[in-house]
Length: 129
Ligand SMILES: [Zn+2]
Image (cartoon, rainbow, N blue to C red; front, side):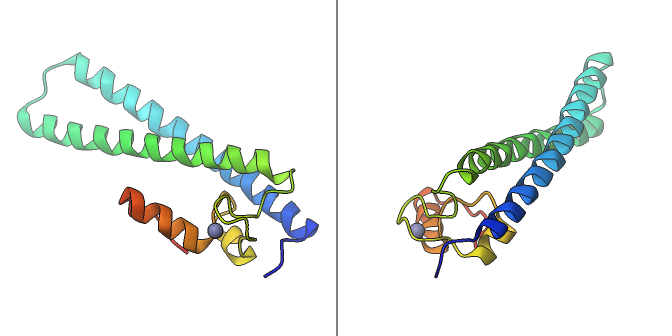
């Protein structure tokens, strides 16, 4: 497997910037939703069913904000790396990360096998390719 070319790198950088903007927009939407929910909650005492629905929707929004925040961090890190030579190399084993993988997850910092290894350690069930 060879390292990515300059052209591929440019395409990935574009993809990262687009993805970043999308997440920022989504994040703003979720944050606004949370604020609106908080205002609703302080406006009156909802009945129990309403409260339950409210709690679920707040939980979902909080989870979405947290997930988007994590992804934003990963994208920022990738954007910082992308102009350096270590972008596209696995942080753990140093081997080139497959372009096919980077095309799907330009923020990936590990190759497939090291990613699987690190996820096994944390018990997290996140995406794998
Ligand atoms: Zn690796």
